[in-house]
Length: 285
Image (cartoon, rainbow, N blue to C red):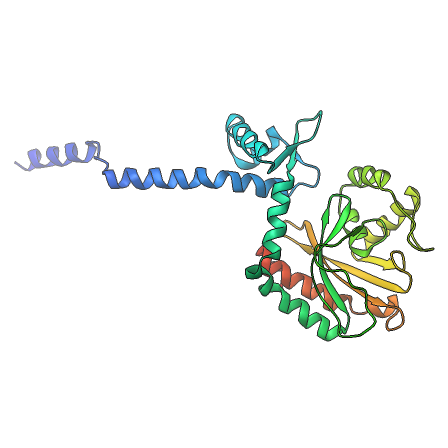
């Protein structure tokens, strides 16, 4: 009898277990959720590439078959969330994705989280501070908090300024891969705004290299006579510069040397904004 029970027990152990409909529906739901997130993960991966990425590299990063990634790319490209560089197999974010990101930063629900940080910085420095990002060959002002001083430069959110003669612009250029930076600089109009503006490719590239080593963008009266500015990068968790906190002031109040002395305070604010908006807690102080 004992042997019979042992045999029965063994047979029960080896018998395939029935899977409930509840378990199957749970697995199906998890799989559907993962598939639904694929377009977002693809866009996030593209956003981390300065020069775009190929289909093969993108599929490898996402851990998906090329055919699946290609279907996603075609769908997103049709809605202008993704672009394919002409004559290449390189994909980049499209204008609709960029616009979505900027609208998100402008949204009151997001802006009210980081604006107190900018306000506190302005209170400490006594000068206007801005949150900027690169948009193609220009700098876009996402947001700003104004100084209470009567003498100031007014550039409302949404304003675009040149890259070659602004602190944020040169900072963003310095964060690009060298070949891409060179190509972009060569294509810029490089209009002379003041006597201090770098208008030649050689002079501007030398200034960008100094910016890269310094880690701070500087405008020494290159955009507007009598105005100086510095810009500090806002970095994501991968270390990519996605925005900048910039401060400008009339030289009647502060010299460029005086403004650079405030760089540590601006850097702390940039790190706090990165932690708040990008989840980059490692940089928060």
